[in-house]
Length: 74
Image (cartoon, rainbow, N blue to C red; front, side, top):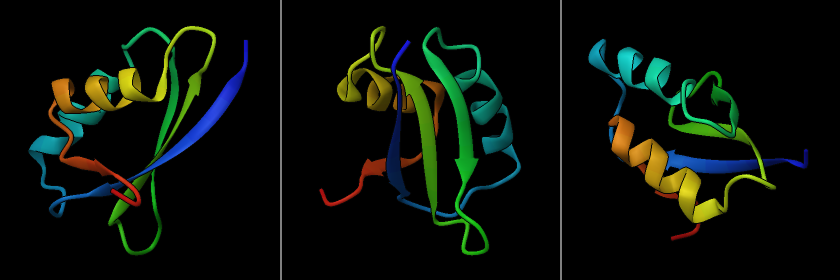
């Protein structure tokens, strides 16, 4: 397993409904951890298994689960 961290900016503030979306991301095979940037809560860091997923796969999984993200630097 090759663990890699990716950072994503949130496109809007998270609401109560987004907590369910974050929980869904944890069930995606290959994603290990999702952490909100503290204290600003304007970005997330995702740790994933690079032998199972590409950065585009991670972004697609986040969007599919309903997390409002954009790739940092995009």
